[in-house]
Amino acid sequence: MYKIIIDSCGELFPKMREDGRYINVPLTLEVGGQQIVDDETFDQLDFIRRVKASPKGPKSACPAPGKYLEAIMRPVKQILSDTADRLNPLKKAETEEEHVYIVTLSAQLSGSYNSAVAAKRMYEEEHDDKKIYVFDSKSASIGQTLIGQKAAECEEAGMGFADVVNAVEKYISEQHTFFVLETLETLRKNGRMSAFKEKIVNTLRIKPVMGSTDDGNIQKLTQVRGMSKAIAKMADCMIEVTKNCGEKALAISHCNCLENALKLKAEVEKRAKFKDIFVVDTRGVSTMYANDGGLIMVV
Image (cartoon, rainbow, N blue to C red; front, side, top):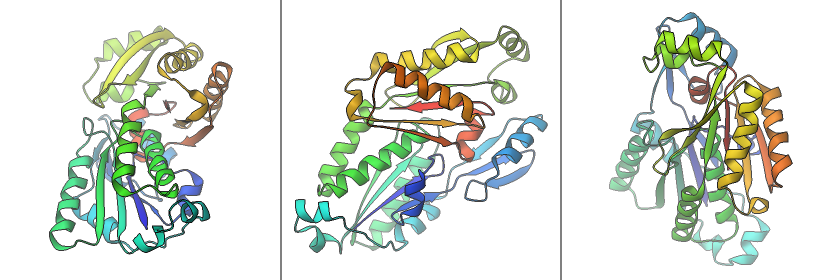
């Protein structure tokens, strides 16, 4: 029996939302003096409107350890696959001990990882019926989603807990995240960019193409003029560091810009064939980071 807990920066794919083994733990957003829980009630367009109207940038707060503890303790209905049963006949005998995998937003960007680790310790002080591991995604958004999917694939293949952890940690070390922003307004409001520099960037239509570092931080890869060129450059940057594309899944999340997300998908498909390509809309935390028109790609 296994369960995968992902904080709400990770967008669940439709099949994941239908599967009781996946649980989202919400962060809390604040904009214009109002707190917004990043759960199924999140209204993206209303949030974008509030961000534009607020003179101050939005903020987020990570889940308290108690929220992760609730998710760890929540019962889950296990659905054993025929494949898992064939590959590992002892799998059914192991289901009394639940395997719990928690995937959090990069520890470099949020306290969500530390909160999840605290919840794990709290549970283990009182119980010994679950094996729990917390993954620092070193990513965000659909990067977390792909990590959760990888853990599930390993479990369904009949792998033991330690082998799943090792395989997923290796997957994280090889994962790459890329993003481009349509607007830099939130950076200015949060004091990370001057109003003058924002005006120059917007006037010249400069689009920085950003990426993740090995430790889960953010770096600028390059910059171009115009979103169309930025989309093509994102695909170029991805291909430069990605091997064995046919064996991998690639995911794209977009903030209120499906047309550009599909353009990015088309650019990717010009360059390589992937096992799967997913396109999803951003949830609350990713919407806060990406802002209206932002694109995120992870492979």
